[in-house]
Length: 149
Image (cartoon, rainbow, N blue to C red; front, side, top):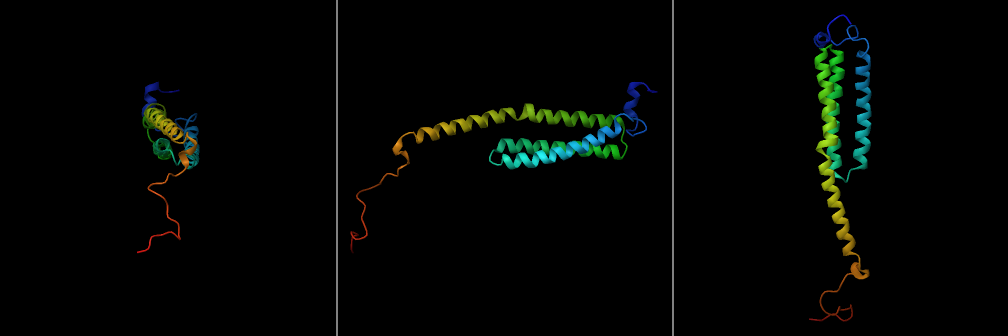
């Protein structure tokens, strides 16, 4: 450590200046991008009938794609370290906010609606004759008993 800690913020993010974290950062970003892609594909196929969960995964996908792609680009083109650090903090913070603060109220409302619909469906079909279609009108006329004009 040759510089004061705050002077490293304005140093180029390269293997020469940051030998401990340079390769770990871009490799982790690439791996996390692959993991996020697989998770997005698997979870959206599994939850295709549940809109709030699909929307959350859409938000996480785009946030992760932007964050991890920017980290790879910033490592490749040797940006200053404060930009790399800001990208990490903002990107991961946004993903945490999406998962734990933004969407839980939507999930709770969605679960309450599903519970209410399930209760109504159970009450509707609670009687044994509820699934039998009732006749409307008078006596049904057979084929041989139709009125002739």
